[in-house]
Image (cartoon, rainbow, N blue to C red):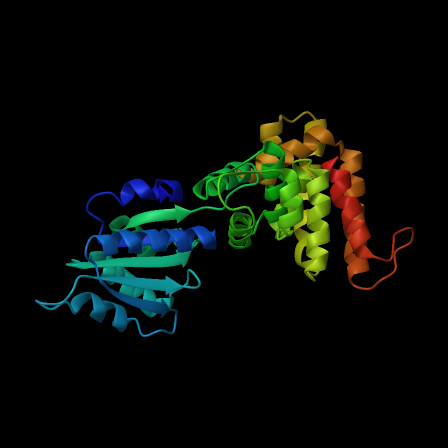
Length: 336
């Protein structure tokens, strides 16, 4: 399995006959498929077939397309695009067969979003074992300034640190829109131009997009400013508070349990195991229990319960009638 940034090296020399482009970042998946198609075209794969597949699609078209090469046919590339990572029973069977087929004068590129649960399924294991896998992971907030710096360099532009920071802040979580904003800078400031923060303020719209996971991360790791921006973004998008408040409460509840066990003398790692906190969740909770004692976390849980009532239209004594203000209070309280 290779990362998106390793793709250029994979496209040098003879191309693999079967590719699996997967991940959580749509822009990088599109660009990966474009790069493979361009490399194939340069090597003489002049015909192209594109299938938009699904669980109810006729998967025999894919298998027939892979078998239909005649003696005088042009070499071709077949693209199979899945909007979800669930191809259905017939799709799973077809992809399993595809993994075992000898592909002659044909390159097949399967593009699909990733999901940790799918990686355990037999058809995915067969496909990923036979294919050259390109994983397109999200660009993190920490990685974004460098990502923008590279993109600007492609259009012969440079930028100072403050401009990159502001650009990242305005485009976080929405690379598709971010690409358009970078192109806008090329149109407005053509040639070898150094981009400043003032240029970003004048030219780049706030196209950042966040979800509940982003809010959880900002809250738990102590970024109060970002948490506040995400709350504002979720409210503007019309996201319902119940769709994410349970997640915040669940994480705070786990942190409170860990803090209580630590106060009773248990080592932190043992307390984490006792509440089932492993991997990234353990890292998040560790950050919170370093900042807050059991009483503060208990108060936060009471606020979670009140937010749930407010979101259902109930009145809660000593709380604001606007549940979004209380959500903001909660996340900034935990983040501080």
